Image (cartoon, rainbow, N blue to C red; front, side, top):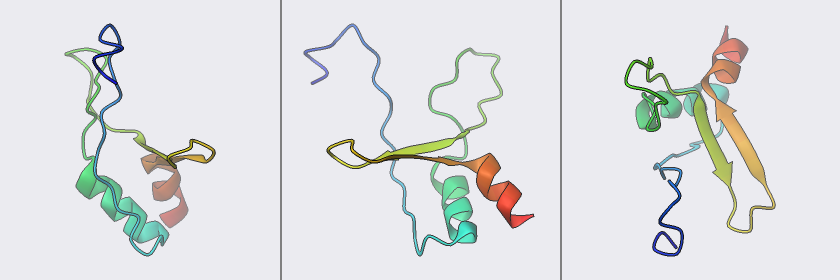
Length: 75
């Protein structure tokens, strides 16, 4: 696919595990698998990751898993 659309920059794929899907485990896995962004907008950016987007193969389900949401829930 990348050869067909060489003029586009693709979103990086990252390994990620949901574990037992508890809020604590999901937040721990966010910290483990994506502690920093892979797509900083500039060299001066903080490089803090917002989270990860999860999709099924058909893209009929798309979910954003964000640090902020899980940190707020666990306060």
